[in-house]
Every structure is written in C-alpha cells, then in structure tokens.
Length: 165
Image (cartoon, rainbow, N blue to C red; front, side):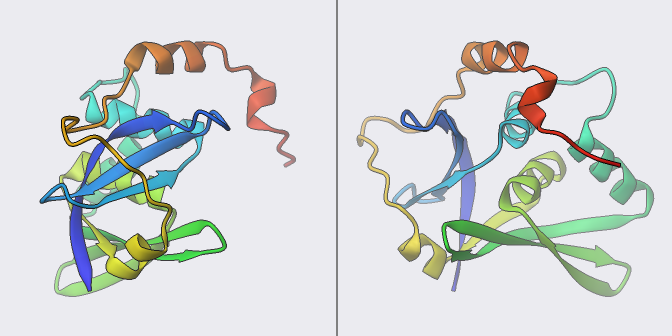
C-alpha cells in the first residue's frame, strides 16, 4: 500500500556529512530519511527554497522538456529498499498512455517538487527504513541554506570524481 508523503526538508548526517532528504506522511506520524548525493540535495533545496537559477539546472531542464512534449508527471513512488539503496519510479502521462520510469528517489523527488507532483512511498519501504526520532515540538526539518552555500562554495572539481569519455 502506498502512503502519500511530503518533503519536510534536508539535513546532514552528523556521522558521514551525507545529505538526507526527510519525507513525512501527511499526518506527520511517519518519517522516512533517504540519504542522497550533494548535487541532488542542492537541487532539492533549490526547489524547496524556490530559487531561480540564471540557466536551467538538470531537473529544471527535465521539467522543461516534459512540459514542451506535453508530458505530465502524475506522481512519483519510492517503491523499494534493497541493501541500503532506495528505488523510485516516475509515473508519466503522455496523451492517453501511462509510462513508468525507473529513477533514483532523489531525482524523482527533485522533479516532483518542480512539477507539483505527489510523492508516495510504499509502506514496506517505511517499515524497512532506518527510524528517525523527531521531537513532537519540531514540525519540520529546516533547510540551513547558509550551511549548504558553504558546502557548495567549497566544492572542487575533484569532489565530483574522474569521468572518462
């Protein structure tokens, strides 16, 4: 069974300094942390903060392509968790046809935020995932934009690894 969730924010794992996107169900009873990459975290934070970039970033480009092709993102689903790796699907509507595309959850979430699509998580994924406790007073995880700006400003080309053509 699927449970609709929303992005509550982004935080950083204090042990590994890895970004984590936090999903909460609509009743705010269940929380799903998903460890993601730095670039994807930046893309999600940009969408959460409604920041407009001078040129389209990757997820903005994908949204623009889908818009021009008259393709609607119906929803995204985080549908599996295997060996500490989350899996997702993007549900598209092209005319009368429905397509389902495999995706990393971080990419699917970044796209969903840009197009206003609903985010769903399979309840089995929630059961399998690591549990995170938040105080009842805390109603959301806040994106610390200053911290992200500092992290992004201090990146070097070596942080992205070596790519061969």
